[in-house]
Image 1 (tube, rainbow, N blue to C red):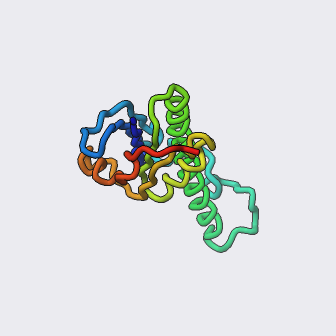
Image 2 (image 1 turned 60 degrees about the vertical axis):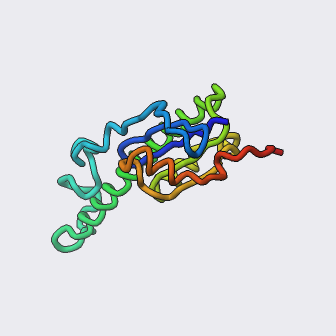
Image 3 (image 1 turned 90 degrees about the horizontal axis):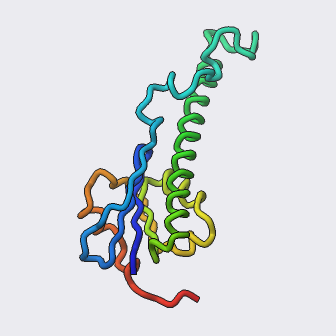
Amino acid sequence: MNVRIVVADERQASFYDAVTPKSPLTERASLHNERTGKRDIELETDRPGRRFGGTGGSNHGVGGVEGHHHGVTGEKSTVLHELTMFAKEVARKIETDRARNEFDRLVLMAGPKMLGLLRQSLSGPTQSMLAGEISKDILRHGPDVILKAVPIEAFERYRMQ
């Protein structure tokens, strides 16, 4: 049985395979989020509250406080959008590999927000192969730490009904 272990954060996703809890991880692929290293101005060009002659007219508070609030909201929504797009890219890779029968079970490891976005992006058949979800950001901790975080049950054979 081959267990695919996908470890992701907002910048990168690594895809590993393991056959037993004691066998070394084999790295199969990695994806990089090309937009995360860029400054905010490169990620978006027309953020709300950040341009002259905004659409709010005289409704803005004294000193443009409301406009600044909208700018922060725009930044947060852009970051979430970029993270969502990266999660969908990672999920497409998982789906492609599942269709090629490259793994029997799937384990996802990511911080809480990324883990939720990954889960939402997976199809029903792929979700049924989930043998574990670890809500930890441990991508940079190395293969030994990653393998130790995989639940032993992920490697157990069982009859899928």
